Length: 297
Image 1: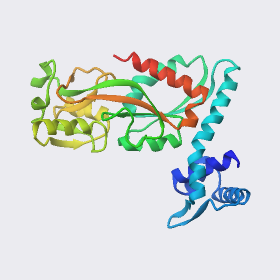
Image 2: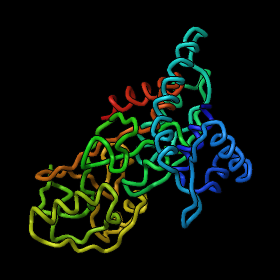
Image 3: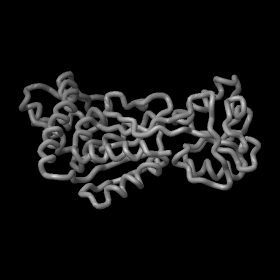
Image 4: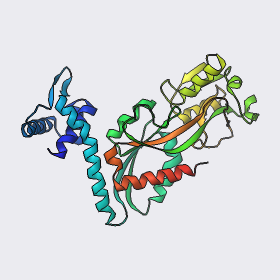
């Protein structure tokens, strides 16, 4: 049994097709097919079978795919122990992050790594909460968020660690009557025009909580994902919205007002595949993320 066979079966189950695995690993589908045939011949059992959209794992393939994370994590721990004897961590760490959390965390993390032997490859994406877990296929760490739990939806079974907690405030135009308030509750904001995120995005849980607390349906002017666009629309007096307290730049055109009476604090969570998180370089970056996140205020 070869480790590369376990990796292939796991990737095939998670990515769905040989074509997708080939694209992600820079190999050809024919080469992967040959590897599957070799594994089946060596193990003496069928690992895949035809399915409507290509191939699916057999019972034997599922067993090996299930064990891949444990085997690869154990190997990564051994490699990390070996690397520890060589001095400071080194290598490349691939991070994917939602933009607002990345803005709050990554500048300080990367500044502290500037003189180190670690290199960060960074990608940003704004997704529905349940979609962040899939991005761990292509990144060592993914910075996701949730207002419902400390493990984002879809990330069960992955490594996860809360690296920061950030209040979500109500953004109101500078001249709005609520701008002078020290805090607002659901009844204060339920009757306003709202700039909201699409359903399935974490901030949408706050919209739902306001509706549940007041029995009123929010007047949704527009659904958008980008916080900078929310800032612009709020600044023009087109409605109120929700923005994260620490990662929203200060502005004279709008004010952030704390929201009470409903849960409005998000967990910013680093998630990853267990074997990748065992790498010493990844652990070093994870520690920096937690340290920077603890200092947010």
